[in-house]
Length: 329
Image (cartoon, rainbow, N blue to C red; front, side):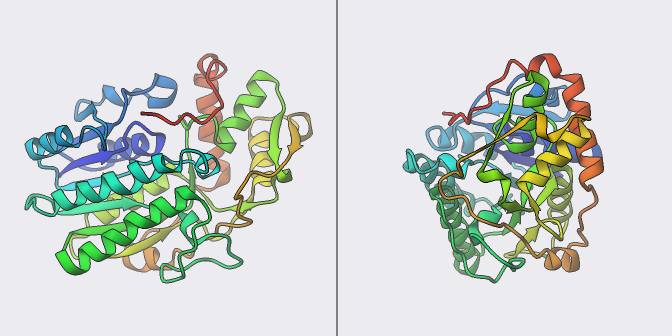
């Protein structure tokens, strides 16, 4: 099988490529991102795999080149991580989020619907689509986005649902909870905590870290993608992918400090909450367990052990990186 991962320059795309290359008998994994691969601290030397090929192509401004590549390679499965992906900053230049997360992808999907070689298009959505909740969200629950980022992701998801219904477009959607992994950019809470520890600076804990989110390791997400890619009888479905219980951001930071063998109190300062911060993201993943046989396998202890190992291997590089979100391309 041949895969193409859009948005492969990001950490979750890289971990998915790595998982496919190590755990499947794939012919090739083609990675596409809007920029060249980042340094090894983030790319984890993914380019060293002989079956991996990466090409920098902008999904909006260079879509003709992307379609040329896809028509040449004819991947069986296309996995889409491509997105401007940070809700906290999406209130500024919101159009940029819709440009990438909605408009470019609708245009691409319309073209792909004409290609007979495509067996499955897997869209990676977000738990933020459901808004703040008090119980685990089902795939059939109302969509209540609370940021331009989440709204832009919803728009393409809804297009895909319609494209499957009326055009038989071979799509499935995975809506994962917050993922984390080695190589994740430093504006995210776990690598940002590690950065603060390594540089001996205080971590700004927005709103005291009271918001709760569900977290999974990117390897668990990659495994869900791999399983779904091999289910030829499943099409037009939406699956939530997440743990059974959410964790407060404060507790995530505490667990990270514990894994790094430092005291929580020495590295944290409370700051104002961010605009649009939802109180809780929480997913019901029973459908994925029933139809895909997927369940969480990597829990906090093991997951944070991989983060600590990453911090030890790349310490000298991590401390040189920015902790600010960068809107690329």
